[in-house]
Image: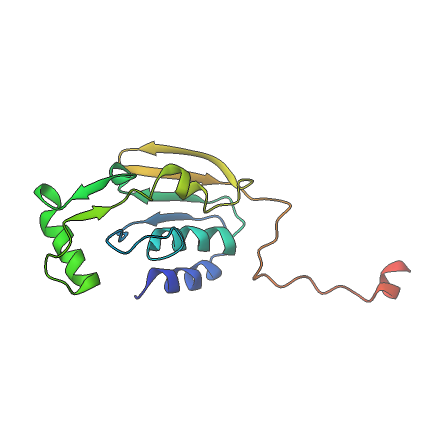
Length: 154
């Protein structure tokens, strides 16, 4: 389908009611020095926050890796090497996957605090329960067209 940071906003705009989002396959390798760049998860979460104002549930997979620096080896060896080759084109140059910037706090910071109703970790998933913010309007939704002021007063 393509780059999740480009595709997800297009899908989000089409959903006009509460939804469940399941986010997976996040790349957190070398060069992901900024919370705002190179970590698709943050782009996905911000798109959900910025483009929606519904009571949604967001599941983020791989909770066991949050906040960790993971050496490539053991159970991660083949999957990690495939990801490294896919995203960098390098052969085995990286020796670890860096998930230290992905934490509960950094994930929740992608949402307006008024929208986060609750969050919890359960079976390798971080689950965020979002509520509708009645004071907030989604930026991409056009404002209602108002009648001219003279017509509203009479």
